[in-house]
Length: 267
Ligand code: SAM
Image (cartoon, rainbow, N blue to C red; front, side, top):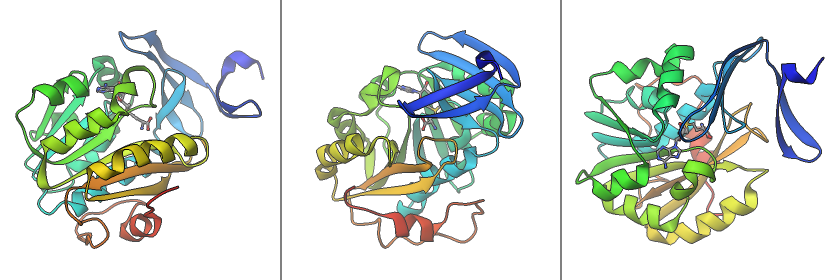
């Protein structure tokens, strides 16, 4: 099979994740990153940003459920939610399954939102929800300017380089701490348990003392490198371990047992 028909995501000189590009749907450079969308016969439409898989139609729910539901169940009364990044709309869709009053989504690159609406309509469906406010801006700049206080902040960023690099700093987490309510909760995607372990371990050590309650947790995302994905969850009060998940919200995969069973104070 000729190489030009394959998308290859290398994570080690001896390992890559490969997808056959049955049909190239879009390929361009936005103001912030290279954006590709192609169709794969097993995974459906696939979104690539700067050479890394962001979502596939088939397995996106694994990731979006894992990043969205834990902070919403841990927070005592999640009414105002902020999503930083998340331009594909998947995290927003999961957040709006909860009885929240508003969900502000701050995505730096409008091109990602537009591509998601065009090629991932089921994932982008919540952009039209009346509780959703879509803002195209850098997450750090938005937080520096906003007067809002949030009950939940979710950092659904890409990898810690390119436009997302500013979202992986102690300064950014101090900023978020000032913008969450007393019973507020923050979750963030931190990377691959296997391929980014050193980075995650060091970054978590650098920020965890900012909060009274800080944990790492995991969930599988089949098309992400190493399969097991790591998230961070942070709160100003000891809320995380004793949180109780309400039974009225249906998920396809992620649940309270997976969440609590994966909680770690270090990796
Ligand atoms: N699930 C993916 C992962 O784990 O890599 C993340 C998906 S989402 C598409 C990541 C989004 O973060 C991208 O749309 C990107 O444009 C956005 N982003 C990157 N840096 C940002 C920043 N500084 N402020 C706001 N959004 C940002």
